[in-house]
Image (cartoon, rainbow, N blue to C red; front, side):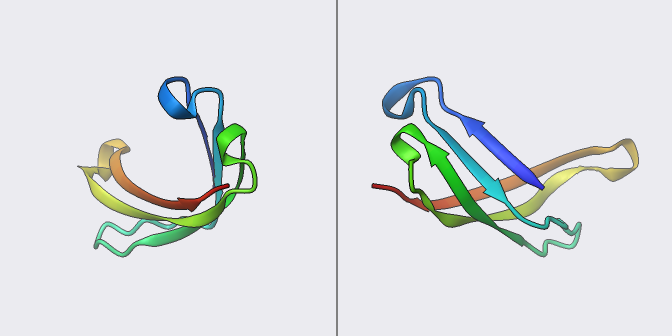
Length: 75
């Protein structure tokens, strides 16, 4: 799975951050880890990781809410 975030306000305006990884968020609370693949602007040469966890929802109706914690270092 690939996540791309585009920042449009504040100190990171015009920058982007990309996450990449195999994501299998479990309904039991098991977390998945993704890598920070890179970024643009302020996040050029970014490194780090993210943790994705299932927060709540109704899987029978395809309504899921996930929690994403991102830890990133940039120059």
